[in-house]
Amino acid sequence: METVVVYKSKTGFTNKYANWLSEALNCDLVEVSKAEINRIAHYDTVIYGGGLYMVGINGINFLRSNMDKLKASNIIVFATGATPDREEVIEDVVNANFTVEQKKQIKTFYLRGGFNFDEMRVGDKILISLLKVKIKMKKNPSADERGIVAAITHPVDFTKKSNIEKIVGYVNSLDTTDNIEIK
Image 1 (cartoon, rainbow, N blue to C red):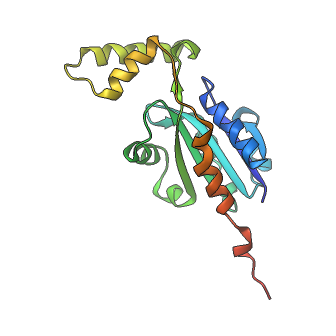
Image 2 (image 1 turned 120 degrees about the vertical axis):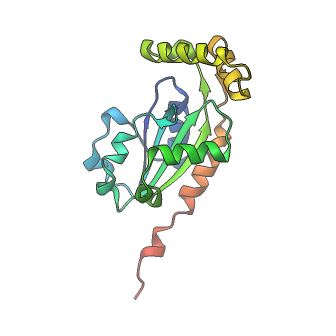
């Protein structure tokens, strides 16, 4: 089975996971800005990874706008973020990024990444600074919100190579021979 990992990374956490997946699966790796859909559509399995920005997956439009060309492919998406891996996080991400029809075609995973304010672009820094002010104005910020404020001054990296095991296991469980009619 031919597999490709396509990704978009702003601060390096998604890049790290994409590289680990490519190594573990011995497959091709393509940064989304260099991805050509006509080539990607020839893969049996397409894995897309992007960081979360207010539950939106960075660069996911590449995948969403080309779903019709990927109907013959197994599609896997992983999103990275600083929030702990919780079922409601995954559910929010899936609901915010995919239609009901797309959800049927895509297997989604969440991999805890990190947060590094210094690596962000100016526009992202402005938005995060506004978020920080908003959080600080709250009487009782949540643990996640307090973590965001702390991470702005002290970068955090929660990436672990072992986090990719669930994706690797899923890809390895895909067996195209199940779809072959034996006569």
